Length: 411
Image (cartoon, rainbow, N blue to C red; front, side):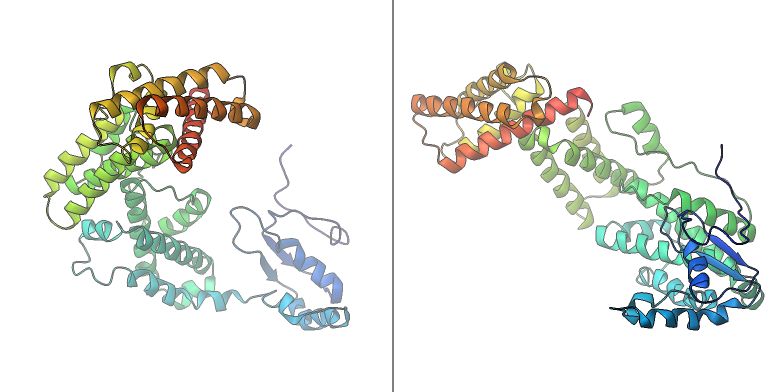
């Protein structure tokens, strides 16, 4: 059975009735004191996708609100701040629309050519600026939605509505582009559907672009199709770079040494392009190469005997990073790191049981066995590891093993 869309109340449901999604209250009977407060409370609950509760007063009963609120003066511990903003005139909120419109444009005041879409997207490469844009756009759209629902606003601001709605449409499309380009996920789907309907009433229908979930770089064909939809070499490069960085971040625990290396290489390429040391074409070529190396795990140069599994490669990388502090990075160091990595891989396999990633006792037994391995190996090789070095290898080895176990189980 579907939930009711409309409820007509005569005498009941003013107390003990709570439906947070209830958004609009129509008042058409005389209410006073606590009864009035209880009625208002029906639409002041928080609910996903709900910005405000709306009250349409056909009876003029809100004139009694001050008297109703005065009842709270008699309650022990009453604080006037607790009920501030209980009721806000819609027209007061709508008055803030011009300022919020200006605040949104202020982000882009340095752009000389206001028709240069690429300039907007490049300006939003900075994460802090981009998230300020998301916040201000959300604030502007929320207020515009409220304004377009007001007959008074449409009558008095008829000449301004085309500008407000045109800019709303432009910035929503810009947001979709930069979300894809910089691999952001900003969930506004429920809100977008409502504002799109209102904007289309004033701007007119246009071609709809379906924005889907971001595609992982390991879904090669789908990802390449998505990149092809992006216009411009720099925009394509940013899309590939941001999606590759997202993959690196998500998989960092699986192989810290490998992914940290490529994270730095990626940052260096982006920085070189932003400082004009690379052309757009060179930038695109460089990030494509890095994306391919991350996808295929080439470029980590591991000994053959640890190449049988990604986990063993990861142990090798993190052990070798620690050993570099005590050796000259010679072939002997590589061989010692490989021996330790193979040993760690065997220990993890021997101790792993069902759901061991949530079993602290099993993890501690792994660490003890790995610690014994490290002591025996360093004695054999004459390498003196500090207690901090050993702790780093123990912690990162178990964290890496857990990441691979979760990846295999799909959790």
